[in-house]
Length: 401
Image (cartoon, rainbow, N blue to C red):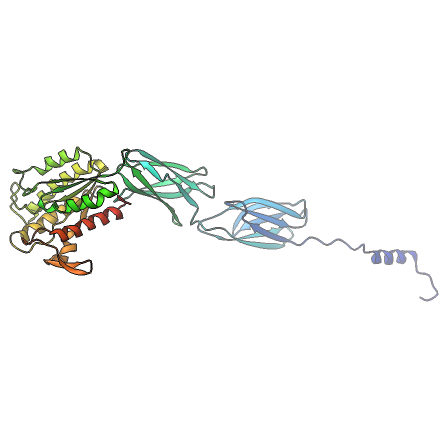
């Protein structure tokens, strides 16, 4: 080629190549996912303009687009799911190219929120609000309201995008536990229902068994704002209405509207009731349960009063060994039918575990006598222990703080 001129066309081609007029490269085919907007998944597609692209998740087609630019934003392509947090999305171009994007959505554990007041007036309706934090709606929830001492009552709710209103009536004072839950998590609140006039009122009643215990309850609870009234009737019993008709007495006592009733009765029972001879037989126990159940219903006042009925600890001997188990069986049977209002406090296990009588037991790190000489009643130490058991139960059941 030396000494000879190159043809003009060759010179033009060589010049163009040196000047960089090569064909432009297509943008990379890529897909990314993000969860910035609560409840939704957004995608960003990078692809050549003019080529149709199909977006899928598994076998489900979510979108089909023909980009006009190299970068395309696809908003709210999918919603967050509770049962599948790891998600994979695939983009397939009409030219056969494919690309995928992975993303992990938040847990559903705190998706459901519960709005409830800290306190309310007893006897009034309490407003609640269930909120879907994801604002998607269609959230299946279970709402349970447990009164002080229980048991809880539950119902199904469907929470929409704007939330769901609910309410319950706080019939008696104390802490009402409200639990809203899904299969993935729960929200819980305690609404403390208070009386308009202030503190609680407690009625301690029964036969001579309640004596001394009522004094300790008064001494330990009144400094905490609880008004304690004692109403003991010595030598009376459910099976001997000739001395005192306890079913009528319960109605009279309930008229004063106590918030709490503590009942200790039965040491003087053992009399025939109708055709049922005493004591440890089905007919007598069934009749005792029926009469005690009527008393429980009177005291409970339709859920407005919490009733604590004490079981008789095993006696040392005599006819009491036959009557006390029958009385306790009747009390337990009646209380099972009145679970909303009544709690049995088992003093048998406190003082005579396994039904074995004992005069003394460990109290405060020392073995101390807890029964009186008759082998039936509690002495001052035993009454103090029983009062503490009652107070602990009141606290555990959110009647007291």
